[in-house]
Length: 98
Image 1 (cartoon, helix red, strand yellow):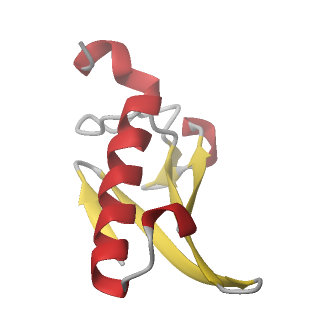
Image 2: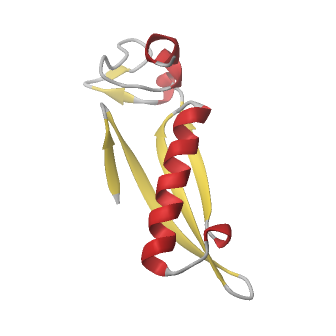
């Protein structure tokens, strides 16, 4: 599943961790997000997954892999050299978060 979030894309993986009962895990790979963004995404992803699958919300795990700007590149340039203008992420939170 991918969700376009302004400039960057969130790539998700779904793992089933087998304990006594299946416990789904969602993994989000994206530019490093603020805690506020993570909270909104966690709520929405877990809510939808629970609704569709019937798995209780407290049995669904969500993990974030956030990448700094020097760990992402496009057009042959690191984002730290040329930050994406449309992105809303941790690196520019002071500009858009209020």
